Amino acid sequence: MESELFTANVLAPFRLVISGTTSFSLVASIILLASLVTTVTSRFSKERGHIADTTYGWPVVGSLLAYSKDPVSYLRKAAAQYGKVFRANLIFTSVVWLRDPKYNRFYLEVKETFVASLSRGINRKVALDHYTDLARTTARDFLHGWAEEEDIDLFEHISELVHAIIVQCLMGPDFFSTNGAELYDLLHGTEADIGNVLNFILPDWVPHPAALRLRRRRDRIGEIFQERLEEREAHPDQWENAQDYISYTLKDSATAHLNHLYAAHHTLLMFAAHTSTVASISWTILELLKDSKRMDLLRQELSHNEDMQSSSYLQACLKETGRLYSGISMLRLARQAISLPNTNVTVPQGSVVSISPYLTHQDPAIYPNADQWTPERWLEEPDLPKRLNSGGQLAYMPFGAGVHRCPGEKLAGIIASTVVGTVAQEYDITWGEGKADLTNLDFSKIGSPWLTGVASVTISRKEV
Image (cartoon, rainbow, N blue to C red; front, side, top):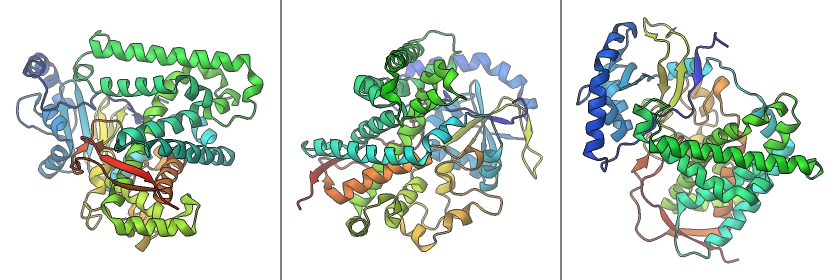
């Protein structure tokens, strides 16, 4: 609908990282390119509304380099210096940041068109029950194997487990058994190349290496879907009672005729469901590993209540992880100029607009001891989410909010609850070789941050 103000920008190319190993020649190339467009971008500066432009370091590229190096520090410094609304000009991309809980609500309640089949398909009770059984069985299979290893890289191993569950739930067991490992490699390769700096500074039609790799992966995913769907068409009786999301969409009259779009749709779903669920599980396990008393409390509660999704302490732990380790940004595109309520600020048409769940959740004015993992806060005040998101503001949004609340929230909750609960109930976990710096977060992925470096742990079966 043309009347919509914002549209989602799920795989925005400026989720890039310029690390300390970035070559000088690459930086020099960026600066040279930026100098060529300075005159062009300045022509439009007067048309962008009453929004402060952030300026750091080198002309034109300073904001890009500062944001890429440390997005948290950059955004905090910019908010302190420029206020609740400011713009970061990242060469060809202008990003307007809204840094206020009231703007969070406005941002997330503006509607856009979306396919409702996802929410209908994966939130049916029969489907959720199937996903719960599948998550439990798959988690136990993976954990049994990990217990045979000396040390494991927690994030990477949880990543493989979550991928296995998601592919089986959304695509089906045929996709996992035939193409699961290949889809995992395609997912990680795509994630790495989306963040390539050349995708950010060059037009889509320029055939640089990262872009070519992305196209090859896109085409291969399309081939996999064509192969599996043709196989299902040849044996329809085998899928009559299947509960995976593809089976649902093939039967739903609103989506059955869109099977040529399934590959692109499920690529987005893999990104949306994978990274943040891995982060939720991994950070919760690490925080419990840091505090044996809290791990003991969880184990004690689970010993009296095997329904992990109704375990109040487990759910408090996952809520707190969702607060402390949320994504640095949500990204949407302004499809028309829009005025922010109760201000004289106008966001220009075509601007990328962003809010930061991470910085909202880390605000000490909203959360006492905001930098500490404290699951008890959700038990001491059960209505805390409701209070935080009342009065015209949104201050707790690990899964978005309003019309932009994640439709896969229940599935993600099932996976996280099942994996963390199974680890706590059935396994002992200790630190492995070389304890990592758990304060060094990696925001380069699409979704919640992972750890920069390796979180090495040892998992062993509990003795009965």
